[in-house]
Length: 368
Ligand SMILES: [Zn+2]
Image (cartoon, rainbow, N blue to C red; front, side, top):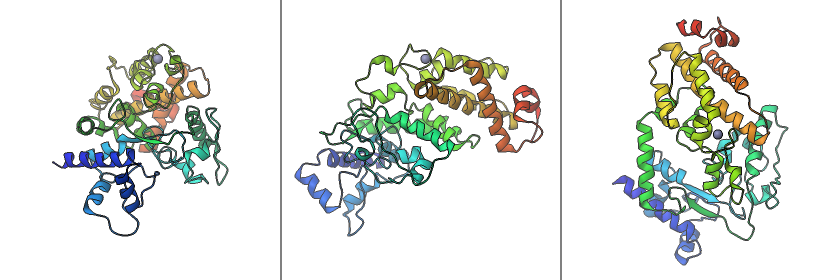
């Protein structure tokens, strides 16, 4: 079975990474020019590789559900930061910082810098990020986002960075856990979440929504479970809106009393009676199986993205900028975002953003 073969190849890579002091691993690393800084296996840039090594390398570039599971499952736990590339390795969250902040990466003058050279002190959130040109205002917003994340990192200079596997709660690799993740991945690909790619909202919003529905966003509880927020008081992991419960993706975006009110107000705007589902995947499934047609359906779907995204931005504002979030303001913001996105997508000239907000019925009857 192809999947079983891939899981076994991934196990080899895990052993090479974790047993890198053993003789056999050192021989493999020397033969194929691997360094501590490779977090997925690479084909050598010169010379020939054996068939087995080529197979092992295939885990890093196979684009199917199993390939995704394996590539997503390996992470680096940063201690000293001496072996980990700040922008190019997956050490914070589900993506590399290069993937998450592409504009900042492009402007960076430290594209190959190691974590230890960017975070130059231990534990006080001090950093040295340099750019080739001045950042625009909207790039500064991303920069604030990035700096907010770096606050939680403390380096431990005496320890080497290590590879982790996120498929098991103990962060150790097992072939069974690859299967479990693969089954979950094929389930989500087959049911519902594929419908989240609509090009209705900015790509980063659709990517965020897709990740949120799979609970893969960096809320405080998830950062804690990945050892990124370690040693902080438990209350620091609480939801920034209600300050009462652990901040999980489903809590902060859906079941927190604050977020439930926001979703209810958007449903009210549409004259729709809704009962909050228990998780975000069910919410997206319900939302995207609406009976609406044409423009009405697209606007309804824009509201899903706008609500999820706006709650998340409000959450970041509350955490990183100490802003007090107001329900009425957020509701207006969601309606404005949805209206702007639908206008951008379908070039609607007869209605302004304000018209769409105040005359939803008229827009719903509009046929394009
Ligand atoms: Zn809450």
